[in-house]
Length: 444
Image 1 (cartoon, rainbow, N blue to C red):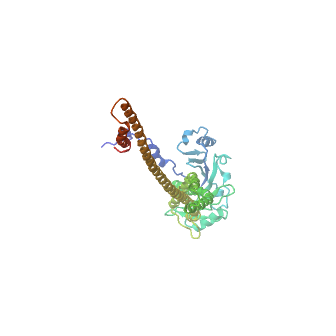
Image 2 (cartoon, rainbow, N blue to C red):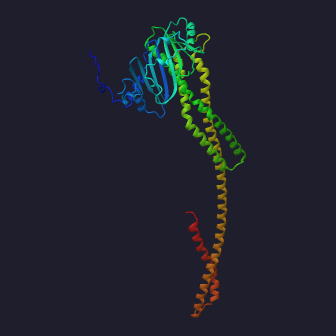
């Protein structure tokens, strides 16, 4: 039996959809790093609004040996640069760009040190981090150190010393406990947070990369989810004012305390305010829900176990993040509810206006009907007068004709002949008028 190797797929499949290759490779777009212990990760996230890839590419070219970096290399929104003694990852997302530096952790900063200083050991060129284009949104120092996990309580004591005595949260990670993650979620004067990950010395580089990536994504998505909270707090007074105004409008609508046109104008302005708020902030609220789901997913992937007496990362997030997310969701629902209420009030007012318009139309039709009746009566009167006038002129003509005949010697008496013809003339004029009337006014 023959086996085809590297066969041309065009011989076996229809032509590819234009998006097939791009979407297929999306799953490989941001592979986890391979990290060898002990390691130091410097992680910086910047908001990239108004920042182009060109600017970011120019900044990356300032790294040693990257002067020939091409913009095309950034088109997939991911780039990994292997430099002398460290690795740098660049990742661009819809709202932010993140930079991850991975290098060896100096001996003086490993487990057992007291609040070690880390930034002076960076392998990056001096000032390169500070000049990253964009506004800093998250910055984390992560130390990955080797140690035996059999005594987590003792490790936690050393970890508290590493964090300078700050209260910490800690989680044993993995179904079979392959890591211990510790953080204090506090910003230091340098602008960085800190995380400490303790793993057995024989941990694989892939596992170290996955664990650090999940922890950093949790912190990134947590902060991105919270971007909706200031917006929600700013909107709450405005929505309260809209609710009060809507209640007043509803009361006026019920009591007929204002004209319909005035109420309609007020409702239109109110609807415009609510719709403007929905358009301006709807995306932010939807993004908050999406980022929160990602946070919960990443926490679930950690498979945390608690150390007695210490909060886990998931518990900390649940208690501190959930109220903020609930506030954002409630504000979003409140906006939608207000929009629906304004629409219902507008519909009610339109119904009342339509009913009033129908009543006015009915009154107008009644006036028109009465006018037509009067017109018909007037027309009948005019027709009667017309018959009399026409008959008078016809009889007068007949009288002149009779007199002319008598003057010509005919044996007739003009007045008698004319008097005898008056009924005939009246009937003929009346009959002719009725025929004309029937022709124009009776339906065919």
